[in-house]
Length: 462
Image 1 (spheres, rainbow, N blue to C red):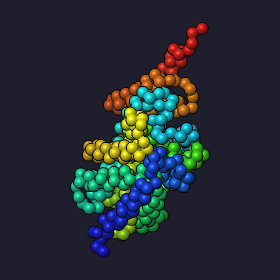
Image 2: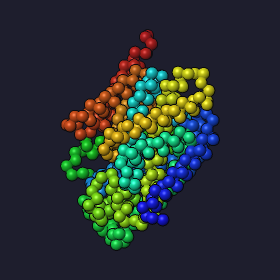
Image 3: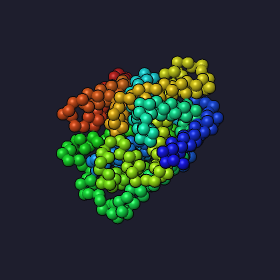
Image 4: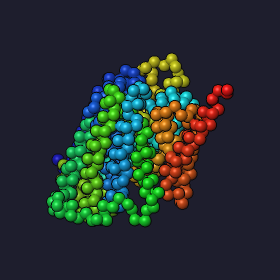
């Protein structure tokens, strides 16, 4: 087989398997809970690998490797280190409590704790975050296809979107989870193959590691202020703590205990596998400095150092990482819109109708994410923005509301507005070096003050 055809053939075979899994999973979908939370049937293995594969996407493999190649370890604080810590916090603070309440989406928490108006406001904030995240993954997918085939990125984006929508519509969360296990395995193998190839090109493991300079191992960027440094850690650790994409896996776990243990296990797996692209970037930038530090850094390096078959395997791994993230984000948007807005407006709708609505929303979400991706120049920038947009208020209301009875609907509503408003305003003021952290602090203060006022207002007169 000609080398030029090898990669497309391998990718086609892999994607055919993906669609096959979607068709298989579609036969198991009989209700909204089956489609959106896999019937709450996930055991430790499925839950762990699914959590890992959901977040170990284009950002870790392509975006972070390019940032680390340019900036050293300081470019990788968000991924993999920050997101690993986030998974640990999820296990400690959220996994068990959310699962034991049998929610379908995070919006259910807001409705039960603060009322339907707050639920709709929170979902209106969370939907754009998921769309931006999906756009980042679609952009990465299109860039991989462009590197492989040489076609225009826009055309590749259309093809990528069509494929992802098709297999996400079919299988729902169970389809996502099963493909996550397949994708996670392929991804790990592909990255190990590339690491071996980079080591061989550098003259062996010892010679490769010797190329890494001390300046590359600094976790602090030159001239970086304390507050900017703290903000860079806060965005992935706190900003992603209330991510529906990951929380859906916990809500779909077989029990609260499985949800907690799977989160801990996923954090260890994330850190271990995440160390591979970190090492590749630190060494690879010395092997081929002419590549530059664009998002295409890792696939371009792979083409240089790997045999065509090994390169084809890695491209399958990259596609797997991207697909495992983007299908989850599209399903998240669909679940938010259908479960919060459409289904409640039609209380007589049967389970089959609810599934049809959810599938229709997947199509709408995919098209919207593709339109956003057309405007995004950098995967890394898209993901960082998605991790912080509007989540400060969501974070405070979920954590405090889940662990205490402090605060009611007015408190939650005010906190959501302040969190989103401060994030948007502060990110546009150059003098503010920690916009997300500022938004979290302002949201926390708002929750405390308005909560005290609301409690006083509702206290019966004596």
